[in-house]
Every structure is written in C-alpha cells, then in structure tokens.
Image (cartoon, rainbow, N blue to C red; front, side, top):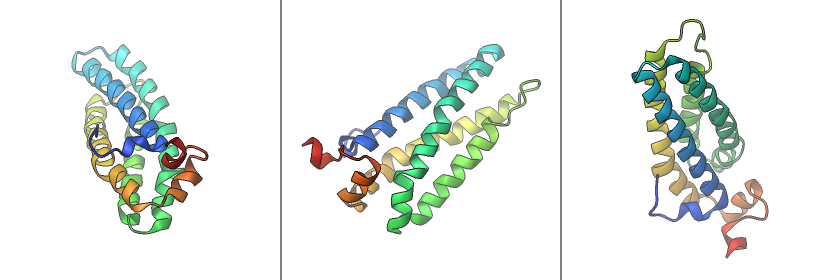
Length: 149
C-alpha cells in the first residue's frame, strides 16, 4: 500500500486503503488455503472475502469513482476499474460450492491484487490531485482534510 504521497490523510482514501489492506489479508489467507488443499477453509475464506469486497467496491463506485467520473479527467480509468470489479465479482461470486474451480479463484485473486495495487499507487494519489476538496466533502461530509486540520 502507498505510504508516500499523503493521500491517506483524506479520510475516505484512508478508509478505502485500510479496507484494501483487510481484503489483501483475507485474499492471502484464501490463496494459502487453496494451495495447501484446505478447501473447507478456502470456502469459508471466499465467503469472508466477498463479504468485505462487495461493500468496498460499492462504496468506491458510488463515492470516489462517481466524483471522478463526473470530473471527467479520469472517467476512462474509472470505467476500466469498474469493469474489473464486475469481472472479479463475477468469478468469485459464482463459484460452485459443490465443485469449486479453485484455479479460477486463484486467477481472480491475482487480478484483485493488481487492481488494488493500481488503485493504491495510481488512482488514489491522482484523485487527491484532481478532485477539489468540495468533492471530498460531498463523499465524506464533515471529514475533509481541511476540516481535520
């Protein structure tokens, strides 16, 4: 995760980054369970990952991504990231409990890792530069960096 640009000082970015950390930890545990053949644990971890991932991506898309889309400068990148959300959810959310395709899960986890890395090191710092404070006020009322000091 990014620690150099200060974008985490924005409460929304800080929260999304912490969620990325939690998602990556869960995804790592899932990967280990799959590789080690602990498929019962893997199924539980997959459900846990989805429980973290679905609300996280919904918050990104309805908050930060909506502001970036409206701003226009990063609209194409936002669309690409939303498509990745749909693709990752499409794989992880449709795994057959009776006959899970663990190799598909592993590929989706690889994509998820790259996706998070891109948001952390590309989109989040760019959002802080591109969006006015008023945009952050709209998506995190009362918690803008200007309000926190």
